[in-house]
Length: 294
Image (cartoon, rainbow, N blue to C red; front, side, top):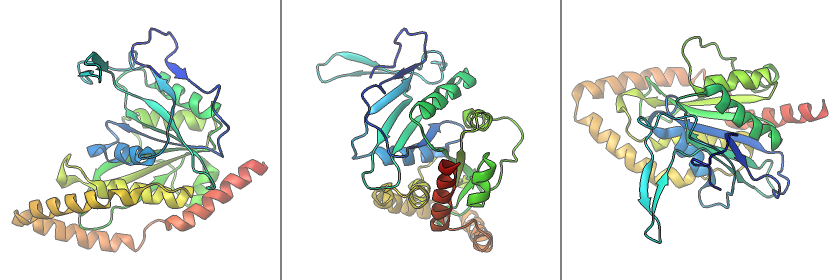
């Protein structure tokens, strides 16, 4: 499916006509940008489709949404040695899980620079036409947490019933926002159930890769959604990066003391953490059953 510079007035290209029915689909999306430090969230969503048959069923034309002096296209040679331009991609893929609770519609894309409302409406159109029961946004933000402890995943929901069912908070943030904030507001207005998951990434690591956080997001999704996410595939990469982070901290006495302080705060905080992923999974399915009965 070709979405780049397609000359269409409509920003969304779809291939739903011959798509076999999905099993209670859920949309899971992450966008590289402000809400995805070190590309932790998009790495997680990409892992959902890795090594699986995941056809592209829709894509958003990049032309109206990007400042190409900031998100520049790339020129590459294909197998026939012909030059090809690759534009920023926002492609929706379908991942089927036979015998499991849900199929997934996944998007690991790039946050636009322009026309947030139009971009969000394109996402909602895909979710609506594919009858997605819930839209789950995943993100990653820098936080004062130690790299030596399991990353914490926090959640919120603009859907009152879903927030009650899962014991999640309602969003309380006020201030400037990105595409995810706009999308969540429009999902709430359209009465489409939505959940936002965020994992904390140690702020002192800068933009260094942190596959531990990607794996934490996937592990949480696996328990809640009841589908295999492939988080174990990140174990080797996570171990390698953990070693690199340990070495970097050990070389700085002040950093070592700072991480020790964060470890103490983390251990106190974990005692009052959100419900376990297993509990959330059971509550999530109960909410969906109640929705269908209504």
